[in-house]
Length: 531
Image (cartoon, rainbow, N blue to C red; front, side):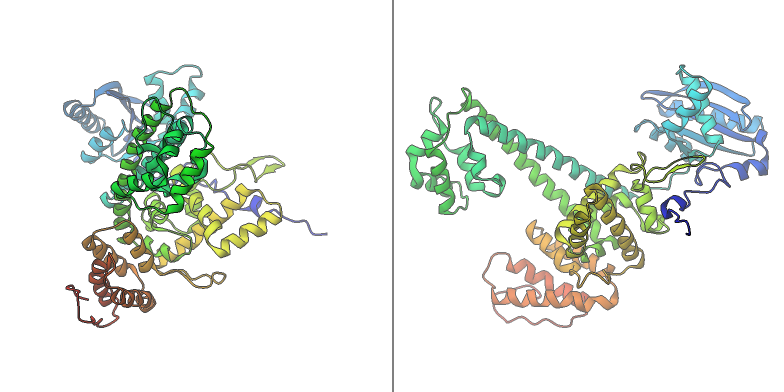
């Protein structure tokens, strides 16, 4: 019987022909000039000041450990000493190996780069291994410099790609939004906790409390005397008084919502002793949450503008991908030119199993590797969860794997890996979704338009984003994108008096013209824009 081979175990994990990382190898450069003519500046960074030394490739120290203040004068003095040593020792080539330390290494890296010195970054885990191997149990700045130098000589001082200002701002926006979302979620939990103390069981009557602004307003804004119990005050007021309160607040409501509040008050349990203060704290927290929600909407509009300016907007043609998830994925991934194929994406995210091999023992299916771009991994797994819920193809795959008894975590990784391959083909090839197992696709412009209508984006910003997205569409797909927009414009003309018709009626004809749909004629009354 022929022996079966484990494809995953036999897959190449890298070649031993060149040790070290490909972006950190300096061997060929050392061979050209000689080890005694190749200088390595090792920099150990801290908050207010750092230490550095200069040694050649063989380890001969040319300038010993020297402190440098993080000021313009201190950095200029250090650069002057390095340049003087280069002339004195006739170094033909050199690099500056800076250890990553939060954000504290960035001023030094920028200063050395501005002085036309090649800067490379060393991960603290790499320098730590070399320091501990040479001096176990001793941790000093001088020993750290030795570890940084050793990591650089072994190809672990890596060249970082230059960051474009557009992509840097895109990434900052998505990360800032994610931070606001987490803080808002924490506030929601706090509000429910205080509301449960003041009005026991109220939130249970409205599981999605923030989708019922009338119920939330009655819980937090209804006037209750200091000595009164909220449930009793609501019960005495009655449905008509509650409805009148909502009308004064200009909050839309349905009568059944008010009736549910009355039903709750009829059988509500006794609140905590400090229910008055619990209710007041909940109201203050809700004001904070509402402010954060407005901030999140503003950030999402800016994320949509950045997304529309890149080829990643084509990912909106995948059912189950929305503007925010596509934007977060694009910002963390960066320019698609940095990736050779789809597996590079999952490799950077660390979505592959760890491997342990020694002699005849080979465990190739270990847990996920600990290293990797954690934010990119998070974005991929978030999209995988959305696809399993909202995409028929991936939902059917997930259900099939579940029937087979597969681990749900493994199912998420499988979907994320497939999405990474599909997204690479779409973005790198500048094409919309083409998948043999997925019948039909979403319209990119229609989905982007729905997003802007929901977020009440200004017509000028909406028009700019849609035009930018049109520029990213393949020419052959523009007719398919124009048809639903033309139908929507016709519906707007039929319902001219509805709120929000005029801004869309001004935007859609211009977008249709960009798509080459031809003239769109107005029915003649009311609209003053190009429609």
